[in-house]
Image 1: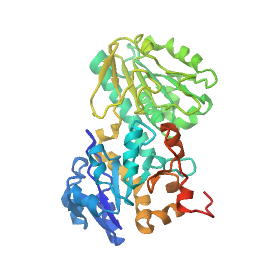
Image 2 (image 1 turned 90 degrees about the vertical axis):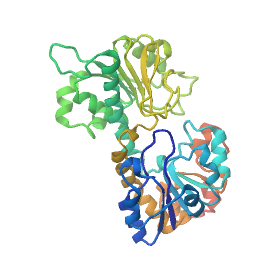
Image 3 (image 1 turned 30 degrees about the vertical axis):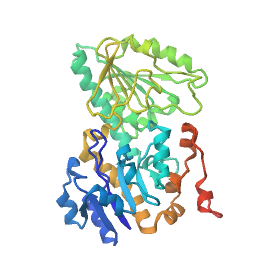
Image 4 (image 1 turned 120 degrees about the vertical axis):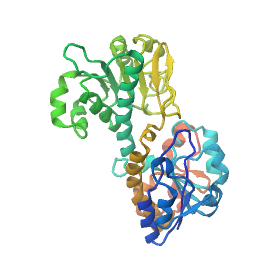
Length: 395
């Protein structure tokens, strides 16, 4: 197969989809690999390193014209839609279910490209291509929120002096992002309020990432607020009573289908934000605009902040790019086995072989094939099984 590694053009996106070592292995497998000029430079991998293992360094035009599979980190932007072509495979974070407009999704799908989304590759309830970036994002949002607290509120972001009270932070949702944010804040002796649907399992989830000794030493700094899914307004009211005490809020939870705006418009409203002390920090790690927090709108810029009611908001939608070398290594190591499988078997045989890949196909042959994204964006859904004429598939 001819595999193309595209250069990211999204603002401040500095990651690269594959490293020279991975490229060398693909070439040993008898594949041809094209690398767009400069694709890896901002992550610390120059053209010469790719060329040394046998890759061809090419222009964007040649990359898209000749590649059978394009591998990227982020979904192509509007200026790149014209490069996509019929039956070409596109493997990247596509995020059709998030901020990309239905109109732009239609434009991508109309090219005939076969879109496979990193974020929907699922192995027995786990999302292995989301995992490393989610874990990294949690760490980085916690570190960034502490930095912003110091810069804007003049508060030392940690409990380092017995004579001084530690700052107060709230983390919403203890998944991978939330647990890693929790780890950083606990290591800095910050008092933490956790909002979560399942308080009974928080410790078990947290200890996947947090050393037992750190947990035991800091567990008295944690207070838990159960998210009441039956009566979400009760949770809103409980959070409201804490707002003036909070120095940092980090949201790591996304709205599920069973919690539409009609049931709970926002978990944190603009009015609630106004109760925080000036210079406090709000971060939404989910990149979902005005989803759980009324004042949170994502940004492409790595260091961009904005103020509402004197409260600093930071909502970068690709924060792993703050550390592009680390992020690229983590991501490429996770994606490579799937890229290698597609390259060796081709699209149809790969998705027949791998249920994880099958579940992550967003579009095929100009049809929308991902049920959840179609429902969320009100797009017509066609089952991939139907398009591929699967008769005996177990998935």
